[in-house]
Amino acid sequence: MLQVAGINFMQQTKSIKDIDICDKHILIRVDFNVPMDKDLNISDDTRIREALPTINYCIDNGAKSIVLVSHLGRPKGKDSKFSLKHILKRLERLLEKNILFAETIEQAKELQNQYQGIILLENIRFYPEEEKNSDSLSQKLSTLCDIFVNDAFGTSHRAHSSTYGVAKFASQKVAGILLKKEIDSFAKALANPIKPVLLIVGGSKVSSKLALLYNILDVVDRIIIGGAMSNTFLKSLGYDMQKSLVEDGLLEDARKILQLAKDKGVKVYLPVDVISTDCIEGNRRVEISPAQDIPSNFMAVDMGPATTKLFNQVIRSSNTIIWNGPLGIYEDAQFSRGTFSIAHTIGDTYAFSLIGGGDTADAVDKAGERDNMSFISTGGGASLELLEGKILPAFEVLDKKD
Image (cartoon, rainbow, N blue to C red; front, side, top):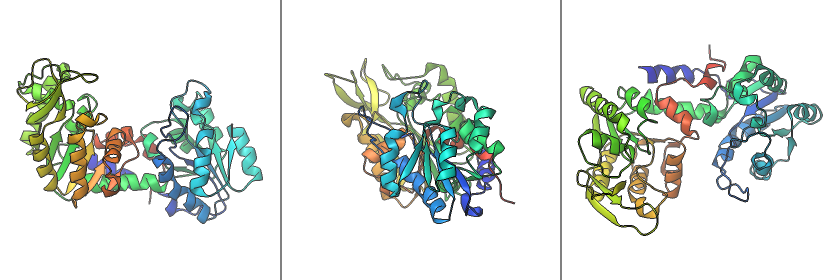
């Protein structure tokens, strides 16, 4: 199975704990792409906190210097609102260390020669060559290190200079503690799961999860499909979804997936009732109805109480749970009950629960269940590609165990 083969390959990656880092210059690719409010204050520092174990490991094991490299947002050129200076104070407070800031790679090299400590490099995406995986930029980055450490799972599906290219020029290249924890958690859910295995998949579009659904049928025993993407599956069964979001071009794919699941003995659960509305914002009417009887000109925005009860029963009888995508418009309090109920039920189980990044992690946070999940991934796109059975580019170029 592709999923298992890819996971097993990535598990062979050497980690920072497998090598001697004493008296070495270390370049760590971290993921400090944190959300900020309009005043450029950090609204969630989870990604910074997740990088601390690797940084502290380097400090505790005698690294000569540590250079931290990250991107922030999607800047068009050097835009000050995307500067990593905005996260410097938070990082210093969390590490309880003074940190030098380098505007350029050349300045980072100068500081490195003068100072045995931690240096934060300015947003790597201020270099237009970064996303082109430029050899010249990759080689420049490699001059900052004896050892390259990738600890940025959230960008590990991108072959950029700071995640992929630099490894070509570094004498040693290994995974950080977070990167290793991510792949070990996916291995526990996909390669060595305790059955039955349940996949909960939601979000707005079938198109973004199509490869996942086709590829994971050999791994899971049950699938819950919710959120707006369930509308496409329900319509493929002949239901009139009224004004609900539907991808009409994927109706045939939806039917194929349902048939494949049936052929492989995978049980698929779809909403049996929905909460629908005639308007997302402003004055609106809200109704609960069977999924096959949505009121005229209404749109499904959350699962109904019968569906919530059904889905929760499936969750409670599963031993491994993988969740990727919210099951309704959870940002709106009136349409968040289904998603939050699912989060509460997963949090109450003894199952191993793996939560995909992005909106799913945010929904779990809003439900107050973060601490009750077994593992919450820091990468939305990267976790999705792992579930699709892909080998992430960042793992391909790191050193492997003998």
